[in-house]
Amino acid sequence: MEPAVDLRGAVALVGRFPALAGADLVVAPGEVVLLQGPNGAGKTTLLRCCAGLVPVVDGMASVLGCDLRVDRRRVRRRVGLLAHATGLYDELTVEANVVFWARAAGCDPTDVEVALARMGLADRLRTVEVARLSAGPRRRTSLAVLLARRPELWLLDEPHAGLDQAGRDLVDGLIRDAAAAGVTVLLSSHELERAAAVSDRQVEVVGGHVRPVDGDGPDHPVGREDPDVA
Amino acid sequence: MWRDALLVAGKDLRIEARTRVALNQVAPFAVLVLLLFAFAFDSDRTVLRDATPGLFWVAVLFSALLAVQRAFALEAVDGIPDALRLSGLSPTGIFLGKVAAVAAQLIVLEALLGLGVVVLYDARLDSPILLVAASVAATLGLAAVGCLYGILAAGQKVAQTLLPLLLLPALAPLLLAATQAWSAGVDGVASEGWRWLALLVLFAAAYLAAGLATFGILLDDA
Image (cartoon, rainbow over all chains, first blue to last red; front, side):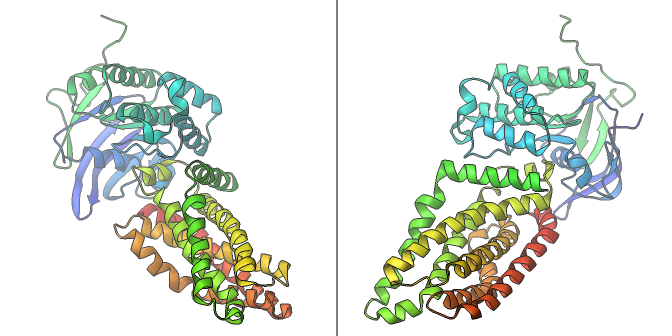
């Protein structure tokens, strides 16, 4: 089966700095891979590369079967990126934001209802202007947009950031459900224990290179924790 | 493309309906400009009447700068540029949607200013069809150039000062043609105005075509 993400010697520049300096990463469809590493290691650039937002200037890069060096725009509609910035219009309500981005992706209005309900935004908060929300509900709204768009590849940059305990548990549940549905997930997190629990495999990003975490290479998946098993 | 354009225009107009920036800030500013000209030329009513087309379009120009800046300030914050790139919306659809939203707001504003020049400047709008047609064509061209340079300036730290600098030279021929068409329509010879209207339509079509061709590239770099 063709990998969902296939980077071989991928080089990507942020300004003149090679934020990815020959990265190798192969992710199978439906796999959940945790990117760990210090700040500035290249995790965010790797996620943005996979989203088709940062050009790959050297090496080979293919995401969902699209060659990023040929046409990185083609992959964009099929991925969902949860970044540090919310990507929401402050002036619109929670519901209007989710509806707008879901319609933009050509999704069904029922997906919006499901997403709002899943993120706990279906009642009081749905009619609140995003500008009036605190960080947690904003993050939940961004996640609702991600859910409503139904992307094939989730790229989650610090998905637990800004959320309370219930929100973090919710994110873990979302990732598990996505994986169960065959969605591929790449996430970066500094909450290693929590993120590792929902991941099949961990890799470390250091200095723009990707390497397996000790004893945990691509051929040695750690295995997701089964949420139903105590 | 048309579905995307409707979606983007609807979103922008919904934001305007909620925030009322054009209504509460841009429209009063435009009327204030008309009023200031009225005070400046008050002693000579004839000069004021003769200068009506130019003064009208200067007021529209100032207002358009504010409207375009506002339209792209919405798209420049907190991850919106990335979200737009990932949205699945076609760049041409986004461009047409932004143009439609800016143009719709300007058309309403021009109606208000038209009323203003009749009341304040004692202008006679002799050829309403020519004036409306010229206004629509000029507004489309203005909105197209505005959106083209709006996305270009959106990613820059100096966007607010850069935009007028980029926009004014590009708009000069458009404003010249619009003023001439209006001169013919206000107390003038309407037959001369139709030639200027044709030129305006040509400008608007060229600016729209340039926007459709390049907006995707500019959005990628914004």
